[in-house]
Length: 306
View 1 (spheres, rainbow, N blue to C red):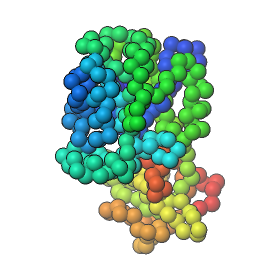
View 2: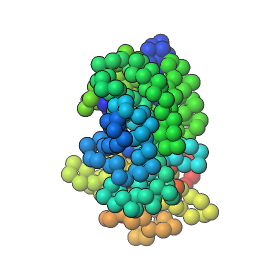
View 3: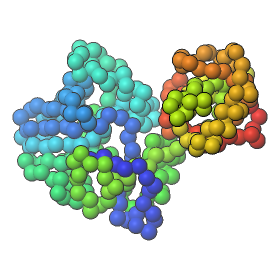
View 4: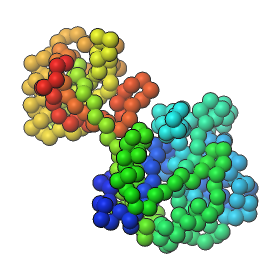
């Protein structure tokens, strides 16, 4: 069951919803047949059990009880927040168990269990979320590499402020009466991301294709530190056609033959401009190298000096 992007439920109805922290990891279904084995599958259905050996002890936690759990595999940073960049070091190692074991010692993962769809041989998809959640919490999943994070009923506004203040990715609101809908992107689960804003300087652009021929497909942006312009990422969404055309005219005027960034970004077909256009972008988080993740254009800032 997948969540639909959207705003948080309003204060008038928020007592009908539970709010969970949105984790930035790899979605997984965990099968515990009650015989001392475990099977972990990705959203695609791929068997990824061998990629995460630290989850293997979970096979014996429930004894002979049969269960299927829904959750997110994450790698946590020093503040206990999910860090997708760290997790990427662990993904794709299902076919290399020796390397997976080595990486488990360097970059351990944690399974955040947030739903149970089968328990003691009984299919639970027809039960409302509130009942499934109660059953999940009753299992008592708390181990070195797995847990059941808290869900808060109501108080969405306060949960949002806490998530934003803690630098978390966002929240997922789940309707208390909703059934589990396999393979569906449901409006009964709503994901709302915490977007941050940054002022950036445009140092280059990449021409668009198709209907965007002659217009920027993306702009290459940077941030100034120690007198140098450091590359912060590529922004390719957030404009209307008119805004893109206006920006194209400004970029052509500012064209230069040299790269203005401290280090040339590894972007094929880049065209460079004088670093004098300032823009404001939305983004979700930053990589450890300081790059913006999921940036989208918000507006030009002619009021700011580059």
